[in-house]
Amino acid sequence: MFISGIYSEKIQTKIATFSIVGYDEETQEIGIAVQSKFLAVGAVVPHADADIGAVATQAWAETSFAEKAFTLLEMGINPEDIFSMTLKKDEGASSRQFGIVAIDGSSAAWTGDECSPWAGHKYGKNYSVQGNILTNEKVIEDMEESFLNNKDLPFGERLIKALQSGEKAGGDSRGRQSAALYVVSKKGGYSGYSDKFIDIRVDDHKHPIEELYRIYQLHEQTFQASSYIMRGVYYLKKNNETVAETMFNRA
Image (cartoon, rainbow, N blue to C red):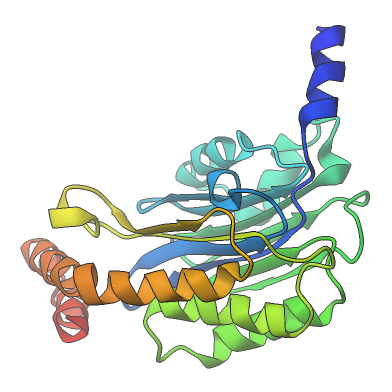
């Protein structure tokens, strides 16, 4: 175990990143957008369940935290209480960073004391923004402002716009490499067979956010209208005419 622990420390790479976890009450879409100077950040940071919420795991990422958080959220535990319940036994908690948004819009974030500066977070109803190894605090502030001021945009685009605002404010102090957008919604996946509405990853690119947005636009043109129609039918069957109407209007 000791040898394994040393080996793990040597091969693990700190995920310097900025991300936003968000929820759209009208469309009941929930997800994460993230950018980092780290290869394939989309394989590590974003986690989401359409029935429960979404979690970002970054810095010295502890990805199993997401499943623990989902279990506790499903039990009705408030996001702000989850950290004290799960991190007290985590020896690396001071180097972790997390963002949580539940399906009811409640949220919370954690930035350990040993996360490399600048590191911090901001959260409120329906969102959590967090980052580490950033150029300055304005990265997080501008991402929050963008998310709150672009409620008229499609949710996926709204998350990407927040990333763009963070990048414009200075972004990751080490540079850029990868980005991802992961959004789930009931029956939002291909032909309504899953909840995975958007799952786009730019694993290695000189301008990952620009490339993420380019692919997102293709996704929007190709898949999103049919997804909204499928979800509209789903909510009609659930006798939720308000959400169904929103879906049909988005299509």
